[in-house]
Length: 155
Image: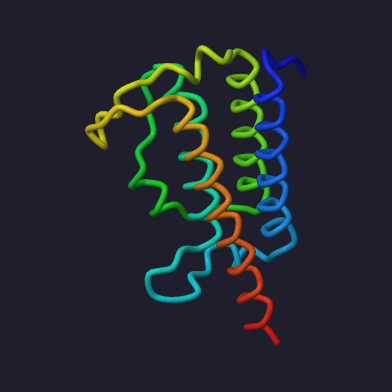
């Protein structure tokens, strides 16, 4: 693993920790729990994983790299998991792709900006990396709470 700057190594280390926590929240649950929606205006763990992966890959990878994204955000909220392994693979694949992007970035990468057509605004690439990790952290917390709700529901 070779990063162009210590910032990217530290960033990846933190992102990896978040994804490991999310992985831990889903890996030991039955399939019923993965697609269970705990309440109105809440999401299943399958949706949280799909959205976290989609969002993180977009803001860490596609956006700072100025690549066209095939991401359809709305589809992430309709996702239903077929297996726990599918969700774990999504997390692992997203983390691996983020690592490959981060290994190519320099400080100049994050000092530049790009236009986000969906939001109609320009954002610095440093903002996109900060947004990606803070947004992921929120949804990691959501999966932990959903896991706890599932466990207590079963008692």
